[in-house]
Every structure is written in structure tokens, then in C-alpha cells.
Length: 368
Image (cartoon, rainbow, N blue to C red; front, side, top):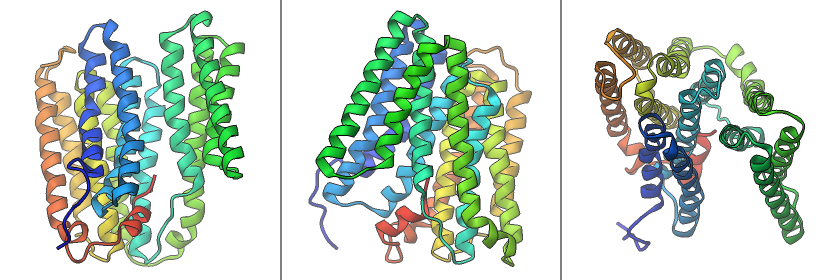
């Protein structure tokens, strides 16, 4: 067995830490004084920067199948945490949040469905742009919310747009390449500044959300355009597809709705979403490698999610951090996390063992 020669802290450690810390900013916003909110955003931004750190570490010292699975999961959970923050602060309509989270669960199920049919879906440029626009859009919404005065927010947005455009121009000159993943976010930063120049805070937030939703829907349509014909014309696996669709609805729409109904459990909602995204990633890998899960697994998971959510709604609550509803949600999340750990144990040979896929291959299996 080859001996690890890299640093004691690996890219996987950084990725796992990123996922583990994501409920903290939400807890600060919910339970700490308003003056602490900026610290929550600073922490969220720092957590986001670790995405670049673990990517660099993986390129420098080599990646792993586990890292290839968890990195896109961490991105999805990061976005979900930011959206839950927006729900907690009443900055986003619940339908917008549900749409964005539901889209990620549907695409996760879509990847498994295609793998069951011997076909694989690559992460498209539009999907990568969607992730960048979502993250940038949520950050801009919060900036406008916290800095409603033109004299404060416009210099900030203008500086960010200028720096981003300068970086895009520098990269174009240095490499001679035109990269959409650089120029589109830079253009969106400039657009965000111009929108705020001509619109008030409330109208600006609505426009920002409209742009984010447009990219979210466009990326979903792009995926369905690639896979629709195969799924509609293909035979077999219909029950598998239905089970995953049911799970996508309950996890993608039901969990955000539960957070809306019980805001005090928002940090636990992030934990639940993290467990479901991770389970979906393991399912992607299993299906890709031909190790088919039992058909009842995802219908059962959907039923447990629905039952757990219903129980939480029946418990008393008064928006306190430690209400019975909070502790019910805590137990609920613990059950789902244990189930997800079992998923890893069952699939351990595909992640760590001799049957493990190549790291680059695993990166294709779980996308954004």
C-alpha cells in the first residue's frame, strides 16, 4: 500500500470541515444579536473560500473518490445554507428557495437514472455558471439588505464589479483564452451594480432573484434536453425512477417548507439537506458502477423524511432555540445522518476499496 506523503491535513479534511461548519452561520443569524450578522456572513464567505483551497490541495497532492463525491455535495450544501439564511431573514420567497433546492435533487436523481441505463451526464458549462450566479446573487441580495443606503452599497458593488472585470481582462491577456466561467460572473457583477444604480433596494433584490431563478431553470432545462429522450424512450427502471422522484420532491420541497414553518430549526434543516445530498451522491456512484440499490430504498427514505417532518410539526414550538420542535428535529437529523453513514458503509468498496472508481471518473458521476 502506498504511503501518504502530503500534509497531515488533506483536501478531504477541508471539504468535510466546510460541510460541518455550514450550519454555524445560520445559527448565528437565528440565535445571536443582530450585530453579529456580519460575522455570520464573514464566516460564510470564509467557508466558501475553502472550496478553492481543497481544490488546490487535490491538484497539488492528488484527489480521491471520496473528495470527488463530497466536493459537489459541499457546494450544494453551501448554497442551501445561504438560502436558508435568506429564509430566516425573510429575504427570499419560500418558492424560490424550494425551486433551487428541488432542482439540485432532481438533477441528482437524473444522474442515477441515466447511469442505470448505461449513460452518463457531464456537468455542463451552464450548470457551473448557475452555481456561480447563485452564490454571487445571494451575496448581492444580502449586501443590498444590509446596506440599503446608496452611499454605502454602491461603492461596494462598484468596487467588486471593477475588481472582477479587471481580473477577467488580466486572465484574458495572460492566457489568451476566453473563459465563460470568468467572463459571465464578471459581467453579472457589473450588471448587479448597474441594477442597483437605477433601482431601489426592494426592486433590486427582486431583479437579482429573477436572474438567479432564470439561470437555475435554464440549467435544469439544459440537463433535461440532454437526457429527456433517453429517459422517455428507455425501458426498465421505471420504479427506480419513481422512487427517486418521490424522494426529490420530499427532500427538495418538503425540507425547505419545514424550515419556513419552524424557523428555529433552520440549522438542523441544513444538516438534513447535507445528509440527503450526500446520500444522493453515493447513489450516483453506486448506479454508475452497476451496484444497484434496492428499489424500496428511496421510497422508504422519502417516507421517513415525510414522517419525521410531520412529527416535528406536531411538537410545540415558540420560536425558541431549544423548543420541543427543535429537539424533535435534532433527533430526526440524527436518524438521517446515521442512515447516510450506513450508505457509506455499504458502498465502502466503491469509495475506498479495490473496486473504487478512478477519481476523475467519480468527478463526472456527481455534478452540479
